[in-house]
Image 1: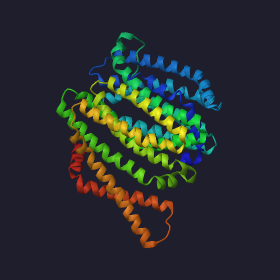
Image 2 (image 1 turned 135 degrees about the vertical axis):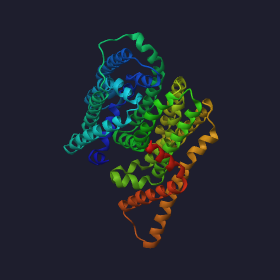
Image 3 (image 1 turned 60 degrees about the vertical axis):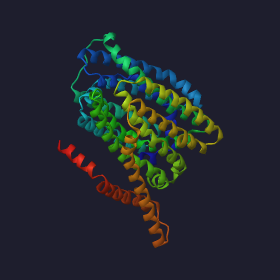
Image 4 (image 1 turned 60 degrees about the horizontal axis):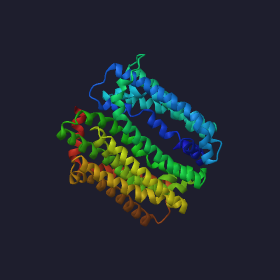
Length: 452
């Protein structure tokens, strides 16, 4: 947030342009091999070495392709500043590919405490560097160097912690079973990145870098609960559910308990983002980012349903059903591309409609299909997530009532900082009260987990 205050919307727009053709390539560079390592019951040392070198070969190839893609990217957006930025992004491919095996070995062995410490150290290093770059006027290169430093720190610490080193051997037949599982998963992840890039292409072509900066940063900000909280649950649940995929009773018990924990965290955040988006944006980012408020609210609605649909993906992937995830990614990409294109041709403000309405409907449809395909009761599912919506409405309603009482009592305009403070303090108090009053069973369950 502090870096966003120092940089310009154009810097974020330029970074978004440079990542248009390269962002989804990075997802595909892993070929789903990391998830395949976790999902399979047994993996030999020879297989891990072959997977490592295949990842390196693919990463090196994609790294070189960035130098070629820089020029069509500049042509697409009619901006030659994109070329050197894209050149620098290429380093991420080779660095990221080296981390595939040791990182997913730690995930497979439930080494989440170690991964948590690695993430904390890497983020501190990269964010400190980014602040220095931003203060010294590096502009868009602040974002690039910060990402590169983050990736290098992660890779070094993961290798050091895992204690694994590859052997100098590569046998393609050893990789085939992993590719069979991983390709569909990588394809769906790549399509998601293509989908995320296509809307940026439309906005960048129809409008300008400044509007693209507003649009892209609103999406990034609204995605924080999914990007920061979602992976914590997914990293733990994917290997755990994979272990219990043949024991349906324990599988459902783990899934539903985790779903309740997850939704109690993210659902109130998204709903409060919709209700109090203006106060959040203006207070944290300043008035220069005020135009992103309607987009931030629309993205919060979309990401609310997206978070639930992503959780349903675990039902398919943990049981090895990756084809259906890939097919849904195709449908979602095509429908949203058409919707966003139509909205963009109408006006910049109309871009909120596809996200708030069309995307939300797609996610709801996917949730219903996933529950039915995996023989999970819809009523049981609704029962598990209902408490999170109750909590969200109580928190948002309580804050609004408190603010109304304050305005009637004092009859004077309260500044934005005070309003934001009210949201945080009153919201936090109401959240804790709700948990203590209505989720005592959840508290006992957490205490038991901590005791174990």
